[in-house]
Length: 334
Image (cartoon, rainbow, N blue to C red; front, side, top):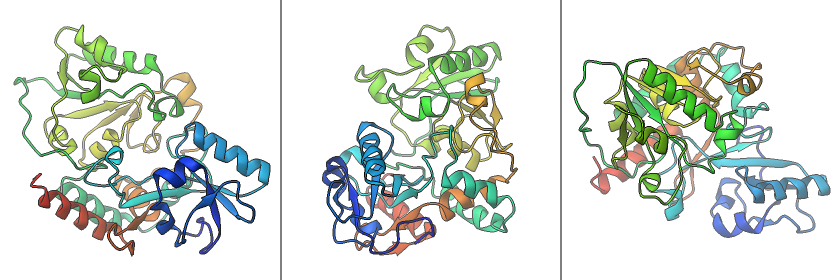
């Protein structure tokens, strides 16, 4: 257990949404069950993400004067998708804040800052090499396939669209104007602009920030191919994003990254930051200058917890990588 986690055996409560949708969470805390947030005698409350149910849980904790912890998926999660009820091989537990919320320090932010003074570069390098060699990302359900993009001698920029409702956008200081500025800057640069749009946006099920405007912009390529993150990044020269994990995946692969919001991996001197006045005010704390490998060590080793989803035994990041790679191979995705 990390030293900021709830003590082993502490009775923990959660809202009905969490206890119903994520009963497996008890294994990460070595509990028989997660109890209701209203149960007498619980000693703390955990909640997932930053939506309304999480806000309710935090308010209950405040009223009951109980400590609370933020929960999220780790940065490598599974082969299948969470909405398909695929169990996560990692979660992040934070006693300070959510990493997607740049307005306040999270435990991850503190770990990244501290990593700049720690001898963890070799560990980060080993993790980065393992992730890149196995072509892994957060979700790993899509096949590797070479993209069919029109040939060009221009620099190729990937612009990452995100869906409305993604809490990381406003929490990182991003807005619809951030996406519009990102697209305008890319077109003005003279590069070949490729917009990665979510398949649900292309199908009309969800609304994105970039897709509609990009579709009306001459020369911009819309990319909605159902292929892996690794396949997409292999075909571009740099990545521009507001707050997507695509930027983190690009850093692992040595690609230049430009951020128009303030995701947790920005502000450390590793990305080119084109933040709005609002988002600039959100990251004055990030004064340390870690290397990419130090940031990787903090993000993938020091911060999350990993569990074997068959036995729920605790494992490390390298065993998690092996398990995800084996899962892809079993589904013939490689």
